[in-house]
Image (cartoon, rainbow, N blue to C red; front, side):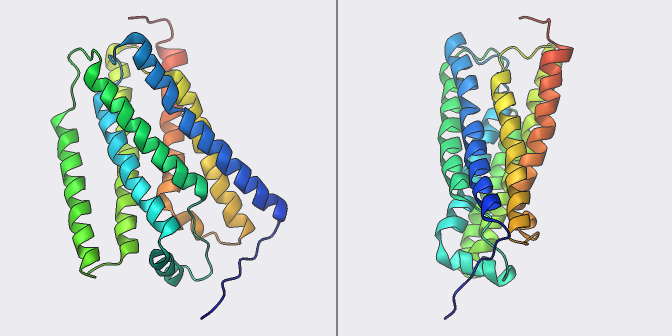
Length: 252
């Protein structure tokens, strides 16, 4: 038996980390509401790419599995410490709450896409193929974990990698749809502004944690959170340019 002792450089930075975490949690969580309200107000989802919507559901679901597992399952935490003996668990309480919240509201947005007018928009076969392949990959990885062929930590990392891939590709269909329509009408810019705020603060929190615990490996201990913040910021900047610069005078 042993006792883990976590040493930090500064109590002030520790509390700033907590505050930043909850602020980005609020920003990312509230970022779902403008799009849901926009859909409700218009009773229409034309302009909101359906590939983006269903990929969001998949991504937040598997990322929720990663966060819940690493935050709550002691055996998984022990496996993490075997790899990072001097590290800290990179998943915070706000990460867990956000994942559950995001999954629920992603599903709600998908339901809106079923019941509201969507024109000739539909989910592409490539997206369905990706979802099928990802689901199969997670299913067989789960069997491998149950049969001890891989660790449960590896399974959770596989889930996080699926989320990271989703983050890399999910914005592309929406950006292309905006370009094709030469308009961002139907895609809420309010959600984008909140999303970029959450992304920047998420990355900031990881750097603060790494500095305060002298644990720069933690940046890669949760590669999905780090990548999620960076890539979401990049695409949010593109959407901001589309909305306020390229297509700002276009109304459909």
